[in-house]
Image 1 (cartoon, rainbow, N blue to C red):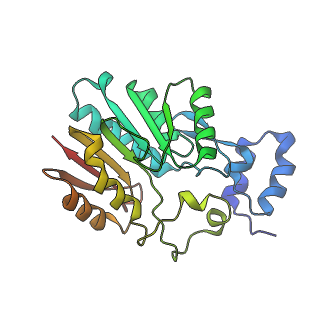
Image 2 (cartoon, rainbow, N blue to C red; image 1 turned 180 degrees about the vertical axis):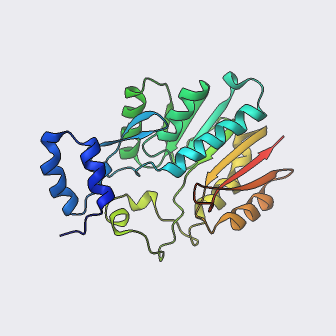
Length: 244
């Protein structure tokens, strides 16, 4: 039997209907994530359905969205004409939140067709129009964007993570080659062709990856300002790269 955390049990009691609680506790004891048992989470005020084809959206990613919106509102004049690309969209939570808050053109890519099915249903349920594309990063794209945002896989294969995460959430969305740096390197190396002259790139990162992502930004991009910012625990969690 899996060692059930009090916080996970409280989550079930709060969000699961009473007639499903007994069944839910049995699943929790088998090591199933409470969010998957409930079937949805509240992300930035939107109900996002989740299953084991997508990552469970987290508070840190809400903060990524919040900070990105602030950067956009302070940097771009005509937000309604803005074009945003969400790379590795998963459940679609980032793209849906940005579309709702800003009302601009939002596209989102993922390599997983199963994840995109979840994302499309979430967009439909939240009554927003997001252009979802099955693509390995930029492979199936030919447009230019003003903003690229991504919470890519960034965990090293030898890194210790919670068992409930490792045993439930899709490894395709968790782990990355090159000590977790593969996607940052690939996105930053190839993104210039898909960006307008003035742009913003927003990343969620592992808390030890800030300096490495900053170096990649300066390696591949010209005339940019790079900022590493912290999460609610004051750990480095975000990198913002922008060109005026």
